[in-house]
Structure formats: structure tokens, C-alpha cells
Image 1: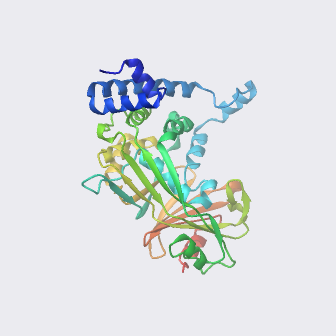
Image 2: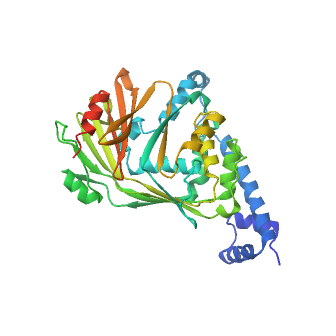
Image 3: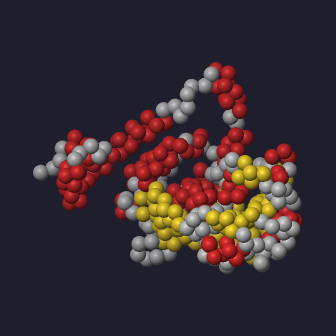
Length: 379
């Protein structure tokens, strides 16, 4: 006996009793025909849900004057602003290049760029050993990238976060080391005592919902990417260790964190996050798709994806306008120095490097020379 289409639809919507849900679940485990029918129903329901979500207003209607003002303000510059807000250079990420910021970056990365398969069995492992910056053109970002709220809603039930450790203040580097579980290094060059805070770590689990993932790729114009059926129900696991933030200078607190225009310097350090993921993906292809979403042409994205070792490299896209970067030697290892103009025309920098399995990020509003001097004095 097979369940009816109405039964399968009710099962998909979780509208049945616990006993009925259990019976259909057991039946689907052994009936290929009903599995296919249930998958089609889920796909249809998700398609309708996505269309309705995109049509639903997120805020009350604007007045005509406000609407005209918003339309006039929407330009390539606005696209660049939206891109910058997703990067570590954004003010809200300057002091937070720690657990949650890295988690956000890695979750975004895992949706599209590859984590190269290292294991022959079930899982592949990603560990940050180097950071590579790539320039992208914000004007090429697809309009669909603006619907992040709908994307988040689509996958909200598939992401589970378990915090590790506790957020706490520390009065010294040694105290922070004890709390965070790794050797914290602080700059000897600093002229004042830092405010040190240990951030929570996290274990993040992403359950792969294949119909949703395929629909999202299709909506973003990448229906050519083939996701094997075996991915459905598998998990991506992200482990973010506790991070330590040290703040120096006259840092005025804002809702986005310390205001770097106050000559504030922030150093964040944490052991490399690790990511485990199923190896069945066409990894280079997905990496190229991600870089196209970040504004690269198809040819540029393919070339970039082919040369990057995705198992060890954290890729950080930055706008090609108003931002400059260069490779530097810092703390005895290669690093990347990103410079841009921040609020009120003051220069700002973000220095990124990895040493002995620890990821470091140093931000400030002074010169690049200051960044290198501080970073080279860590002890």
C-alpha cells in the first residue's frame, strides 16, 4: 500500500500525527517510486515558498519621496558598500575577526566554493593555512545577491550552532591563553595596556537539503552545477575555536564595535577553524561559480578556481575600487595587507596572516608601517 499524494504532501508539511509521519518515513525508506514523488512535492512547495518570500515586503511601504531617494542612491557604489559589509574590513567585522565572523565567512564559503576532498571515505577537511585576497568588481554582482534574508530563511532550519567556551575578559595574555586554550601573543611595541576579551567558540552543523540547494543554484543562474543525490541529508561540520581580541588606543565603542577613526587598533587571533564536508561535489566548478557571484567573469573565475588549493586557502574577495592590497612578510611568514579609505577620509588597514596554525587579523586607522611594526613585535 502506497501513501496518496495528499498524504505525502501532508508528510512534507509535517501535518500528520507522529504515528502517520513514522509510517510514511519508513515506507519512503524502501519505496523508490514514493521517494521520487515526495521529492517532486518538496521541490514544488519550495519553489512556491521562495517566490512568495521574494514577493513579501520586508518592511512597510515607503513614501513616494523615500522611494525616489532610495532609487537614486542604488548604484554600483551601493553594491560595493553591500559587498564591503560582508568582509572583514567592514566595521562590524574589524573587532570580530573571531569565532562568529569566521563562522559567517566559512558558512558562505561552504555554500559555493569547494573544500577539496582529502579523505577517500566520507569527509574532507579544510584548515586555514594561508589567506588569498582577490579583487572583484561590485558592479558585476547579481541583483539576486541582495536577497540574503530570503536565502537565510531558506536554510535557517538546516544550520545548528552549539557554542563552545564562554566569553570573558582577561587581564593579561597568559590569562587569555588559559581561558582560550592556546598560546596568545601580544605586541611588545604597544605603548598602552590592551583590553583583552576571549570570545566564544562554536560547533556549526549544516544539514544538506538537496532540493533547496539545487533551487538556490538555479535561482542564482548556476543550474549547470550537478549535485549528486548522495549529498541529501549529509552534513557539513565547522569547528571554530575560541578567539582572543586585544584592543589598543582610544577605542570608542559603537554598535558595530570599536571606532577605528579614534586611532584604535584591534588584534584578533584564533586557531584555524576546520571544516568537514562530503567529498562528492565538483569542487573546482563550485569554486568558479562562487567567484562569478563575487563579480568575476566566467573565464576569470574558472582560471582562479583551478589554481587555488581550496583545502588550505581562505579566499577573501575585496572591491576593486577604493581598496588596495599587497603581499608582505610579517611575523616571519607571508601575509596580506589590505588598505582602504575609511570614514572621514582617514586611511585604514587590515593585515591578515597565518602562523603555526593560528589565524591573525590586525586592523587600525594609521599607516601600513604601523601595522607591520605592531605585527612584527608579537611575543
